[in-house]
Image 1 (tube, rainbow, N blue to C red):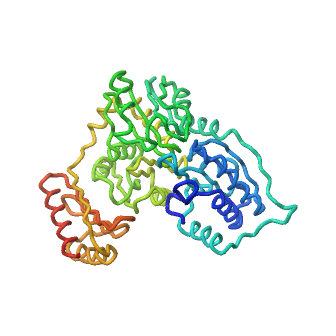
Image 2 (spheres, rainbow, N blue to C red):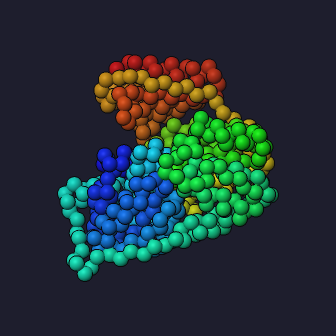
Image 3 (cartoon, rainbow, N blue to C red):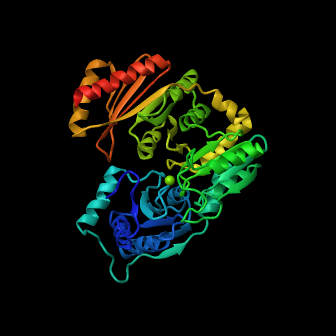
Length: 437
Ligand code: MG
């Protein structure tokens, strides 16, 4: 039922009020006494949040209703309101017909595999402990999550000079970004600022293709920085002052370079570009690779030596603030970098990027094929990691061979500092898959 992003799917099919009640009951049955509940702007969010809250109260725990709020505001509110868990009703960047439910701990981390399994088994076994008639939980409304988030952002960041920033909220719930940047002295223009779960302005996932209007606006106005969020604002991507979309690996490298010192580490998934390693190596810092998914990046980011965690999907984690990817915080951090270090396009140019090759190969029985691939890769290369798929590092670059989660495909990636080396590694990796079919 739960993936690493919680439950997500079409409303009225996978995602129903019944499911929300069950999850609410299970969260309280698993031990939470106080639960914050928030939602994004999707129309179904109202009844799903009410259903989740009803389940929590029925199982004897108290609910703090946050109303409309971003995922980072809900995740951070768990600790701010001294609660034990958070329930966020969102389908993130999915289309309007979907919704979903994601669960949060006081550290700002999503429920890990063990806690998700516990919730699933309570639901599967109908193992709820419902409260006696006079012991059901109470409910209070707290409209302060967005204010508190804005304060936290203004406290965490300084912007050294007044910038012009364009914020594309994408009709989601990330309006706090505009407010925090204004408080930090920036002049802010907002695009698609009205929360609307039908996402009339643009598709909710912020990509180079969906951000045409923001790119055009940046090109026309020459504002210093453009930022955009997905529907629940745990993600942030950027456009520079020339109207060019900033590649997400490069954004990861810029954020990482801004945080590291000698001996520190940065957490990033196995498919992260070498440009991040090379950007932080001069400072004496290194990248620790994780499974793909911001939940795994957050787990690594919880370690004391980790100063930043990034997922090239646009999820950025500053563990001193919260272990939840916080899109508005990322927007403010990027404004701080531009304020201090100058034009974003120049900063982007200062990150050296390398040729990358990708292919998807159709296979039957991808599990067995991957086992043979892993054995062959381990035989052939010295530095091999099998955290997620199989990744080998050489003097010139790296390869990653990974099975698709949902399709009968094996994905092959190769990156090297020189073009010819990237071609060689790519050919080797494809040959290894061919040999294992
Ligand atoms: Mg999201």
